[in-house]
Length: 388
Length: 134
Image 1 (cartoon, rainbow over the protein chains, first blue to last red):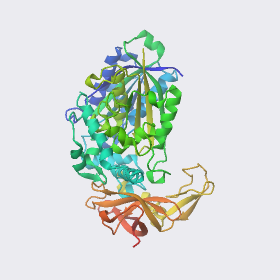
Image 2 (image 1 turned 120 degrees about the vertical axis):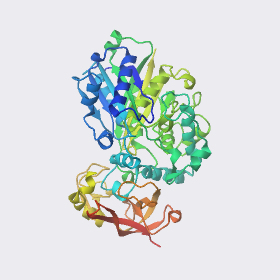
Image 3 (image 1 turned 45 degrees about the vertical axis):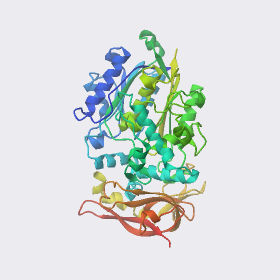
Image 4 (image 1 turned 30 degrees about the vertical axis):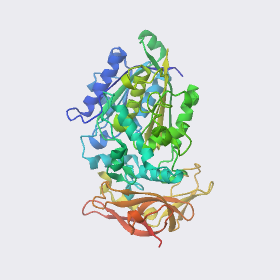
């Protein structure tokens, strides 16, 4: 396999973009990444579009050709990649493989989701297409309810207090204040989180990632291409790995672990020859607070049932034991679903190239992102290394 | 949405949904719901259909307060993972009980109930829900 590098990155702010369409968001992020790469867009040989719900929310599929055309890149191979909330990560994975295999020297990936075109009930229904329509959606379980059942099981099994897990949302909001791309650049108090409305017990509103619009993009290339187009700060995708778990939560042997994440993470760490403790910056898929805590435990930063201690002790902030979601995570940077996996890599790139401003982690060398699809029926992970 | 228009889509699932037909793997002995031809745990291709026991315990549950399409006006309602007497797990609704009275480990029994209606003049989809044993 060839080594794969990030030549450039770009993104839109996450939020309610009433004046911008799905395609305009994608084009903006994509062209911004190409500009950051400092290359001519005609150099890009293939395009991967991460998106989950355009078919449901915009009635629009065939995004590969659409986004290529609107970006002035019609002619190149271009495809949509879908894996529920891991669509963005899956698109980066495909782009990585395309370069690693030697098939292409330079490719682009853009993750995009436009959620505010639809009513909340339609967004709920569209998100539920990630679940089993015949046996999960049929009984009225929502996406929040499925995660809530995992959450309740975890709290009971380990005797953990909800407010300790919910603190994860407080941390993410604090981090987002300094991120110009974040949807919510304001702090929340734990009391606000714990008194926000119940969505599906025990999950409360402020423990859930918001809906929003956004797009993030990367330009990836191999070593020879990089030599022809050098850049000052260099970041390698040292590993890109994906795994699946048994689709429905109730069919899994253990409700309180994230098997697909563990499997993908082990694979990526092994390929990159990196021990988890060497990770300097972590991007966790905190669609719900509990998932952030489970991510910390799966990587071994805390024993089972004790991941909350890292949150409560402030170990997730820059300077802490494991700086996590330093740009706000899904909770506060935002979760435009099919773009999220690309935003995670974008945020790590921001840290590894020392562009994170007041949230900068000193001497950040290794970044790690876990992107979950469904209730982690799919996980895609990326391990980034700063090259000096 | 397209699913709500389809009668055959519901009809072909009727045994699994009305009689709680699960599958037992002849190789690894896992019992899963619903029945299918391939075991999701070991990959063996020799599953046999079995009617699952009607009694079980609540493993975990949630209260849906923002209903998905097809369940408008039914909120709040309970969904739960139930472990049946033979170890099989099903995802279902809990009925005839207030949310505050539900406990993990609570014994429950299957009942036949209405789930949702297809379009206003379409068929009504029925299935198994669970109520407290006592």
